[in-house]
Picture 1 (cartoon, protein in one colour):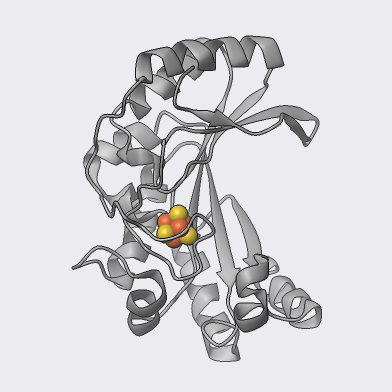
Picture 2: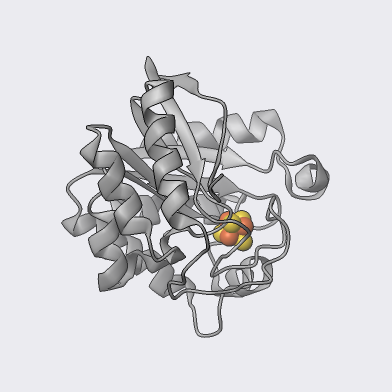
Length: 229
Ligand code: SF4
């Protein structure tokens, strides 16, 4: 048994998607107050080695074959880029002729070593939640020295050179980015990043929904405003 974990295969746009988590426990460069995985005991932005990676790679190869996956989605317990074997993992998937989509929170996409890895992927998802410096520090609690300005400019510069499909996921959070001024700011961020696809999300986790979730009407209104620019 390796240390990766998998979700049940599902169909998306007619394709069989295999979702894989390549981190044995949470490792992230943020420590968001609403993180569904819990607190970040390992707040990191440099790569590290994990045990059992060789057997995990063998298991991944047979999972791809047995499930007849047509897309592998690397969606991990935190920031997948900090696994020092992520380049090998992507190379293995590509050698099987299967496209790869990587979920990152997006902050590390400004660093050369991570740009090279993300560029191997057919699709990359970057995210944004808080949009002011104060809120970014307060609710996403990144590694010291991170700024919201750098976060956005990292994704802007990444996508300027990226040849694959860049998907930008924006999570609307009650009291933080759901007012008209914030929506206007988000529109400007979207224009700067110029993603291939936009996903609008909101707090769905039962633990946080009451405090940070928005109504269906507001969600629909904001989605229309952001998806039609
Ligand atoms: S960026 Fe994602 S994984 Fe990391 S702490 Fe925030 S919600 Fe959790």
